[in-house]
Length: 201
Image 1 (cartoon, helix red, strand yellow):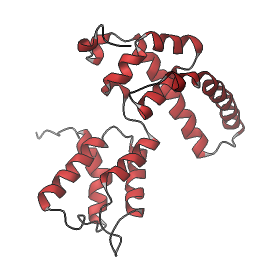
Image 2: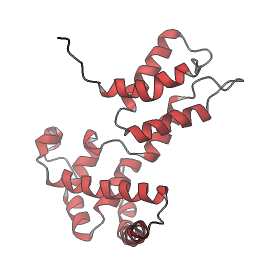
Image 3: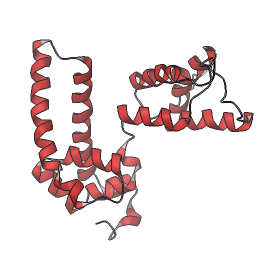
């Protein structure tokens, strides 16, 4: 009896993004060697592997829209694709030592106490180091506005009039809040940050 090998995250990106685009006629960027082109596709498969199926579908459609060349059938640059993907879904924070170290510091605990832990995580991923006091000073107000928006969207959902975009925003925002709390509560060794002990600020 034959065995069925599980699909890897990289294979999922190939199935949902890369192969459909190649089948549709997408070609390598002009002037790029075959070796670099293969590396480019492999890199995309790895860097987009954190995305949900829904967002991978979006990446495929977006890539087709911004295709380069006179026939609009050349792959766009990697940065444009990754930036679009990141705007829709942030990469998992657990892969990023800086985000984890801040969330598990006094700054993270203060964010939890004052209710802006979701905003802190989102800002950490978008801004990265260095992270200023000014960045943090705006977060309580942002959290208050977002909390009001959560109520509005939840009310709209119950009334059956919430748009797809607002539903997606609510899911995105709540996931970041839950993820921030999970990082704060988890054991440090789960996130492999032993080398940072005593160095986080």
